[in-house]
Amino acid sequence: GAALKAAGITGPRAFAQRSHIAVDADGRLTGHLVEHAAMDLVTTVMPRATYDERRTRLIDLLNAMAATGLTGAHVMDIGDPALVDAVARETVLPLRLRFAPWCMPGADADDLAELIALQGRSGRHWRVGGVKFFMDGTVEGGTAWLDHPDCHGQGTEAFWPDPEAYSDAVRVLHRAGVRTATHAIGDAAVRHVLSTVESLGPGGRHAHRVEHIESVPDDLVARFAEVGVVASMQPPHTDYTRADLSDAWSSRLGEERASRAWRLRDLRDAGVVVALGSDWPIAHHDARGVLATARAPRGAASSRAGLSGLQALEGCTSHAALAAGEEAVAGRIAEGFRADLTALGLDPVDAPADEVAEAPVLLTVTGGRVVHR
Image (cartoon, rainbow, N blue to C red; front, side):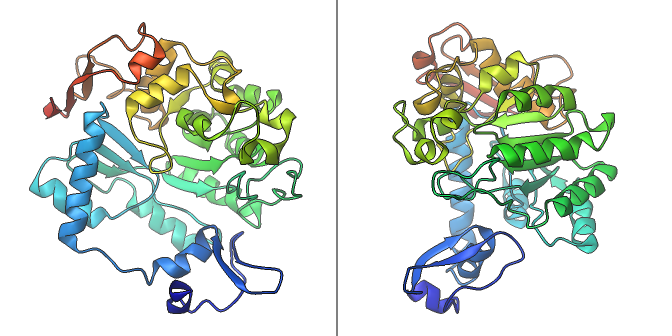
């Protein structure tokens, strides 16, 4: 209540994006702010940590990430570039960070020009490269964009009230040479992103990617390969579902759609580039957990075949580099490539998945500098 009052929230209001302020049957605020525009109302009045506190948190987090073997991260937000740059000047960032600022519904020509101007802004071990979109929300929240409604009759609308405005924005950025990453969880959302990238022509192959892809039918698996869209997926998310489909994600979708959960192996077998990540802070950032869960998906996806050990490793290395357009300088240990590498105490390709999840991280090197030993 105090937070709502501080933000001046007294009841529902209209937003430029698919977002709302929840009320109960009697019209009283519940405190549930659904999607970004509603949440931002409170974000602006939240107490802000001091520079020293934020600096300490950033360094501690990046050191913890390096300790799991990560040498870099794709940051799906602009974050706080002033803080990152200041820390990068004071010391060496343990991880190489690649930022993709958001493009939200309602963005006009000036907003797109600003996003284009941000591209290439950089410092030691960080740079802005790409733009992040949201085509829908979450299955559990009833805001994923689905071909057919979920069991509560929800999930029939895109995050962008006018999906074509999203497509137009992607086209503008593509012509400027900007890569995009679009959050698309539901089948309708994924379908719209694929159609948008297909409209760009052959120059769009592997320049654009879809984040999450939680449930899609066979025809969309094949279209990923045909259009050349990168599938960026987060295997640890499968741990939030249950094999008996009794969890909220599965029950909202129903058995047929829940049985299509996180089709990692199907996408790889179709010839799709599949980049793997954690989606921290939604799931833990541990790179070993990503590798292990990609090979042995859990919950609703546990009946599906996982990736091979090599495919999982490629997802965190060469395929991740290709997703960022950095395949000529990153993703492999080779002469002339960045000295970003990890030494584990076992072979992540041949060792059993459960052992990979607990593998000793003997050494992490970023930019030729030992950041964890």
